[in-house]
Image 1 (spheres, rainbow, N blue to C red):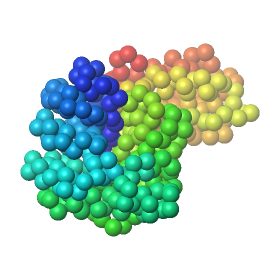
Image 2 (tube, rainbow, N blue to C red):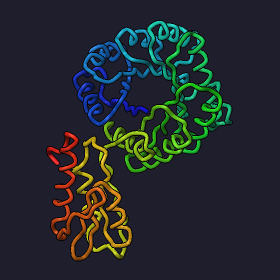
Image 3 (cartoon, rainbow, N blue to C red):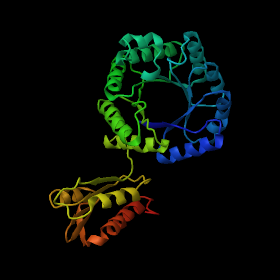
Image 4 (cartoon, one colour):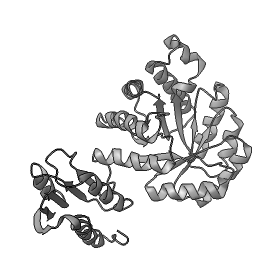
Length: 339
């Protein structure tokens, strides 16, 4: 399972684009897509590909001639939208060239740019069936021209329609699926919509690669995407902080403590379960089940490591004591400096 994102720099600015690609790679991005609005951007791809440690995909719209130019730049693949490159003979030519070069091709259909012949099927509203039909038609054309490394996406900006479209494609084909909710929104609302849509599909066994689309720095898309996969046990996303929602029984500031701990552990790769609990109901049990956990109370807290209560901690020392134990485990795995 791979996590993708797309740069939001000017592709013609090679230095800025590579800087963002590096940030994405460090955050856990597996594949990066770059927009190609014109010839200058296409020609910049060679330097971007050379400077990137992860596969670079060219995102193409409208000008079919750019496809042939970008395929000369050493890219790993191209994304085509049947709604913006509409002439079938041109698409067929692109497919033939991509097949000859052994490039990956994604037929990416979006509700907001669906090709006219399918957009009218819903009487004004783009229906899931129309999204699926357009993508399958495009994929069949690509396959007929010899493209074997092929995947499909069928994205809408609402969760229900997205899920329905992917289910239809999954039922009718065996091609790999790139899944996501397009134009999902800001970090708050977009994360919720993406987690629900992507999570529901993955839980059904639908999806091979994902992108979380947020109106935010691209690195945030990777953080959310990897967390979605980790929540389903599909990847390790490093330390996982679990914490109680707080109630009248909480005698410590769980919100502040959990937030500080989560912030301190950002960027680490070691899979650890860290529990921050605030009362005697579920606290000791959850803390005992974690790799490292703390169960706080009015008189202090109990600190657990690998299921064993190791010591009592004073209220003012909870953060430092918990992080000290986290450091020990991270260092055993080769991490831990700077926590």
